Image (cartoon, rainbow, N blue to C red):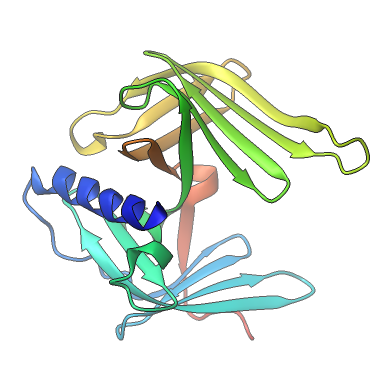
Length: 217
């Protein structure tokens, strides 16, 4: 199923950006850092993801390509041939500048109920954690649970309820969410049928700064 999903996602993104004139690919080459996470892009189409902390440094190498749009750029990357969309992942680049840019990693969600469009309940299960988004015409709720191995029950770690507004013009596609507890989120969903690929563009999660070099490996 996911082979078709990623193909549809690319088609959806291309269709949206084709409405406006296409921009040139961003000069994303170089090293970008968000706390201990680094993305390094080379001119040869090689991308490294580096996770560095005080005890160890981990690195993974991929091939990448840009899919440019007028207001944002999608980066498709994978360890094998990029034409095989079933094994590719995606980054969204927005707010690009010489020294900083907004980079969001996409997370796939499956529709549990509801529709059309974003309305309904969406879930992502990853190992022992389950993330759930619920949308109505104007409201949004986020819930994250993890499995307690001692009890076999799911425990709610995070829960937010609020309202959203939709972005316009160069912010088209964005949802600005204001939760009742003061937490905010800026998300961009790409929807293909019952699959939603969600990019969190909130500044505290997506703001990267340019670095002269990657951390030592």
